[in-house]
Image 1: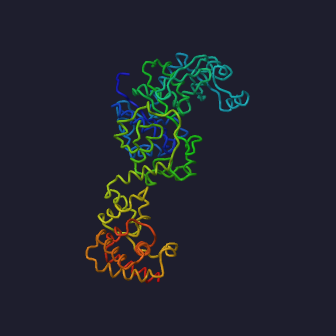
Image 2: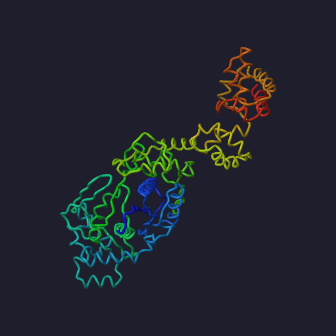
Image 3: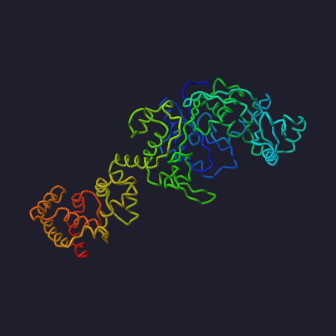
Length: 505
């Protein structure tokens, strides 16, 4: 490696929607690189041609753009190590496959799926390794001439790494410390398939990480069992001195904590596990996304960052810039993090409160238009200021604020039973007279005058105000009553009171 600058990569496979666990991996790579003044690469690992899903690559790119995770080079960005799609790098990998074969570090295997299945049935816990490979159909057991004839005739084959037993392989992990695994329990993984002339993940990611000068491989815990194999491959290819540092992140667990978070958990409990809505091109099934569910990208980033990492203080609301300044792999947890989706809603609520009212109003405008409401941004902004503390999502604004735009057509039955008294019609008729005489309809002034009238007449404050709210709002909800009337104005307030008297009497 020719440089000391930190270089990380995010290398998803385009096999479907990007799981929220993958998003967190991308985020941690981004935070680490930026905190270290380094660079981040976007690489698409599409060597598994059988599992490739059309549209998945663009989905991944759009998801990361929405979240503000930026790349310095890679797919969609270009750079000195292009191409960045592994399917476009076939010739590069073949050179290293040939090197491993020439040096006796790998071998060609012709075993058919049927032959492998027969071995699995015959040998309990069958593994293609040093103890079984000499019983199989491969270049270690077949004459060289037969191997050449089989290849020349177009017989499909795979190339397997040759792992010798009895060696302790040490992986130095930045999160988990020193992890030691015996080579005796490793199998001779497939590195290359002649069927599509593509390497498997194991070889391709080693070659690419080396050639792209990656200094740190930060990935999910599920890849930890592969790490010893990757250490061996660096050694076999003569790259031990340039091997990147590994960091295996803790799993995201089900909300209950028992097992890895899955899409089924989201379906079961009603929360997204994908950043954007995803439509499966094969089944047509639509899965919800954080964006379409109304989450703000900065809230999702903040929420995910604290699942498996902590800043070392009690601060919970952290911008991307603050996260970048504070992030370190040493503060990542070794144990899995429960996916507290309710906490995710809390973060969204907090970020909505921080946003400028006019910005939230502009996000609310399309919803109003969908309900056939035409209103100016200034009025909507004032409405938002009164109700935003009550919502977790922008889409909840209509439920909290619809009465600011449409007079109630019906009245909540439970509230009517509880709040509309025998004398309510009479008292509200008197209230209309009081309101008509007010020239300054600002909230504080109106409140002072109305409460003085109630007190001077010895009326019950609660009874008057509850009936007042029911008449204007249609039910027992909403912000401060006189803030509502200031915004609606005198004429509309009186009109609604009169309608309630006529309807409920």
